[in-house]
Length: 251
Image (cartoon, rainbow, N blue to C red; front, side, top):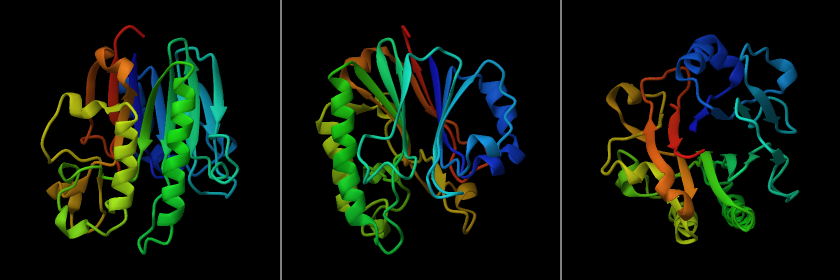
């Protein structure tokens, strides 16, 4: 099974920038989108063969996730079952025969860290949700995690220690997920730095590859042997993020 995840920074915007061409060329079995910022009624998508699942935010033009699949899902779950966290359309889960696929758009702590406390609560609640799913079957989760987990995951770690996306608190949230038995699929294949998924629109950051790796696939430890490929697709334009991909064997 070939999976792709992409923060599109507005589905209506990326549709004008080659989105459909990318989907047709990449032909993923499942495509997870974050920051859709639209309801399905606002978007006309010509994607034959794909069933569409949407979880828009209550606030118009904000946040939101969508998952498109051409592999039959057993069902869908919207949110994490917590009213404190489920109004922004940030989590959309599809159930397949032998794993859950969780599409997540993690809250940003904001430039002045005004949402850091909320983010810490979110991290704990999201991990609890993942572990509840794991009681039923293995889990793949993917999306914009809004954190560079280690110093290898951004170009300038020392300059960003207290900036949103690289605070000790946010990084600790990802460490707890790793300690709970989830594996960063990309790091099964690729070591070192220089591999990024988001770039600031300022100072030609993407051209210079001064970026952050904040988009990823993580899998339950039980799925590790089935991970055949995990990649970043930096040549794909249309958003300030690029897509990331995962190939699972036997699914």
